[in-house]
Image (tube, rainbow, N blue to C red; front, side, top):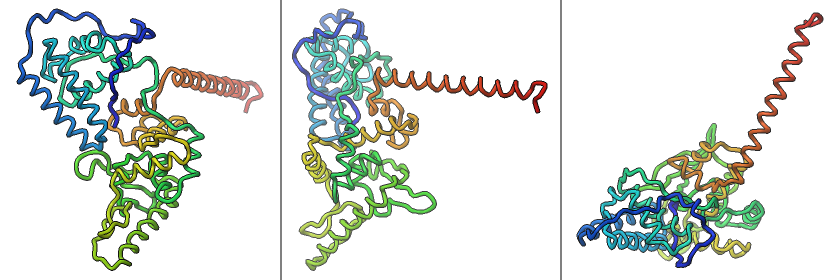
Length: 360
């Protein structure tokens, strides 16, 4: 899931100065006006529809429960304070109050986390208000990327289905739902080998074409062997069944079934325990893929295309860029400019020499 989430920590954050708080603390007097219960119910009803929308986009049940708690707490706070309950009318005043009053005893980053949940909901509801949302304190988001050593260890240790999953996530940047939707026919060969990936969304999801990695053929062969083994085992028991066209299948009591997301989670978590990376999640692999692309010098738009993001802001959040990256990028720019200036001086010198009395 790509929206910020988390729980509220009830403790003061003395390390956060007023300079990092981007919101105006002033909140006008709301008087004695209290929204009706029906207005609050309508807001919660829309929030429930938003949660269903998140589920349809492969959001985990644990995350949905956290979002539900946060949105209900936000709605209760706004209702008790007499603020607008229409998600399309919630604006800067409401956000300021939530930051400075509702969550006054919380860490700055915890406030940002809870308001991030509200931000996602308001965007889904069609809110067009010009709201300045608070940002984290110049730190990476509360997510994880694998180190280079961890990535190498994971690739070298994985076998069987684990090797397939690691390759799809760490080398191709696929989501878990995209792995589950892969079919044998998704892998297309020809002048340029490509994979038809069905991304997030209703039904089969939004399609995109993904080029093969140099190890994709090797991993695909492993997946096909595992698939054929499951089919042969079920047929040896003399039962009749339809063979699904999914790439990732397993032998069940009734034949052959496509893997469920919980089964893939168990495989990946087990692999993480074996190599000392706990807990290991599919989005850890996907984010690491994006970060590796950045370190390799791939342009931001190219990374966005490989990950299947709709906008570049999501890609930036995946990369977790901070001031250290900005400093490194500035040094790269300066080195490039110096190399261009050096080549220009060198070229001009040659040009002047050739253009002299003895020039050709």
